[in-house]
Image 1 (cartoon, rainbow, N blue to C red):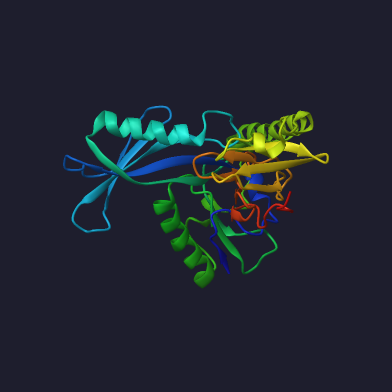
Image 2 (image 1 turned 120 degrees about the horizontal axis):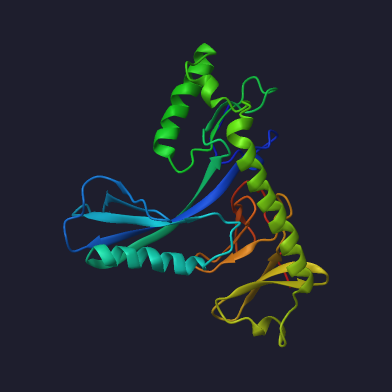
Length: 285
C-alpha cells in the first residue's frame, strides 16, 4: 500500500509534528497581452509565482498568478485580503481583463527540508508513504514514484537513504522542529485563553453580521458560529478533533481552518483536509 494523501491519513509515526504547513493563493486571470512563456518565481517576501495554463474554451491561455504564502499558525491579514493582494500584483504587471478562478493550496515542509519517501514507519513492512514535498509536488511526486516503485519491486533504491522517513538529522532539523512545535503549543494555549474569555455579544447569534463567523464560548465549550447571508446560523465545535487546537474562520473560502497543523472543515463541520480525518463533534445550536 502506498499512502499518498498529502499528509498521511493514518499517522503513527508523527508526521504532523515533523512537518509544518503553509498556505498559498492563486488566481486564474485573462490578460490582454500574450501571456508569458515559462514559469517564474520571484524573490519577493512573500514570493509571487507566474505561469500559464490552457483555458477551458481552448482558444487562449490563462495566466496563473500566485503568492502570499504564510503559515496558518501565524496571525495576519484575512484570507480575502491575501486574494486581493494577489490580484493587485497581477494588475500591477499585466492588463487584467477578468479573474476567472481563485483557489488556495496547502503544502507541508519537513523540518530538514527533504521529503519523506519510503516505509511509513519502522514496523510497516508493506506500507509506504510519499509526503512533505514543500510546494514542489511535480518534482517531489515524480521522485516518490521512482523511489517507491524500486522499493516495492526491488526492495532497494539508490536514493532511498536520502528520503528515508525514519532518518535522523538532528543537525539539520532540531532547530526547526523545536520552533515549529513551540508555535503550535503557544497557539493552543493562547486560543484556549481567548475562548475562556469570549462570549456572545448582546443579541446572541443575531449580533454576528451576515456572512461572518467567530468563535464564542457556549456552555463552557468553544463554538464556531457562522451566519449565512439569509441569517441562518451554523454552529460547530470549534475544537479540531486532531489535537484539540481551536479552529479559525477563513472569510474568503467560508471554512474553519486549524492553525496548528492545517486541517480544514466546511462551515457545517465536515472535514476537507487533514491531518484530521473526522469533523467537529456537533452541529446544532
